[in-house]
Length: 259
Image (cartoon, rainbow, N blue to C red; front, side):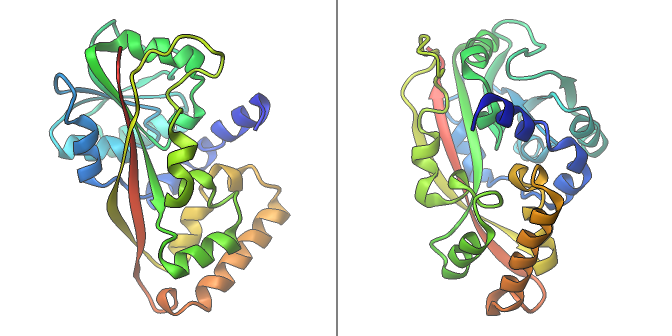
């Protein structure tokens, strides 16, 4: 994906902020605990916080949370649903916080949008010595047969390489590194996966997949054709035809320490 295409995908979510808040899953609490267990203190920045899916989990675990989000529509939704959280306009490349003011920077399904040649030094700036950077991704568990079938039918715009356990580790292992050859600001990565799930119906799962960036930027006719294939698959699959079901998810975590 070239830079222009990356920016187009990264900026696509605002128009779907309400649907994103309604349909995207939260994050496994065990995954968030693991991400934070080596942090030197309780101050956590949710960077690229979106509508607050990860923010809410951090609040539930008792962290001292600040949320930073560049998209105004997403930020507005976050402030509406989590009015007690300090939520600021900003980005990974321009974080509106003082030096060494944060013990851990977490992001949920966002690090792949960061320009780490700029964001890496900026994240390192706001982290206290020994602070943690962790990226979390919710993965559809394609080790389950019907989920693997759904991934094949949906295509990479809806379920891409970072969205399944088979390939997310390789896709994210160097996500914390700048692509320019600049000095790394973080140590060796650790990765782990934690079981999770989301109650869905066929209709709400289609709505979830429709909030993926690749779907949001797709031409309308192609988008409708893709969603039609997904609806047909779910209507013909025993696990998804009768009311609510649990979508098998793993929350994958990449964790690194500030050098």
